[in-house]
Length: 162
Image 1 (tube, rainbow, N blue to C red):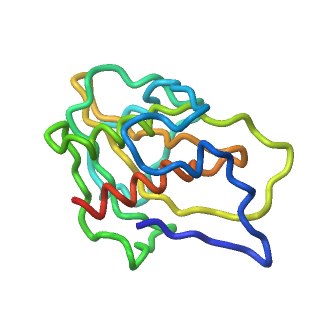
Image 2 (spheres, rainbow, N blue to C red):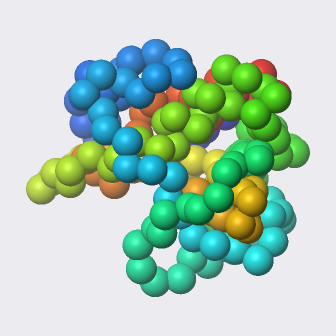
């Protein structure tokens, strides 16, 4: 599950067609793949409550993905109550769920807008275990720098099935 934080009377920016398409195994219409990106980590654990990502942009993730870990969403040190308490682990043996997750995590970030409404999303942390190491996965972002709606929908769908 994913929690949203809204301030004042702000609402989310109007989603683009790519953000409103359903969860599937192919990229939404008009989306391009940028490849899986993230930051290398020394260990794969959801107990990293204060995970600090170093400066710089996400790097291309190398190696074949063996599994994804979707960790329970947190807001600071507080676990969001409606999220699972254990990580959801998704492997290639999970078939369509793995394919859908792998596909949306490879989407490109949308070009940045000049102005956005105040609206935040608390998304779960996603890790990838690959043949070359462990990574915190960069969640593709919308025009306001928030995780894209299709990514959040897919994460929620996969967590519900796990």
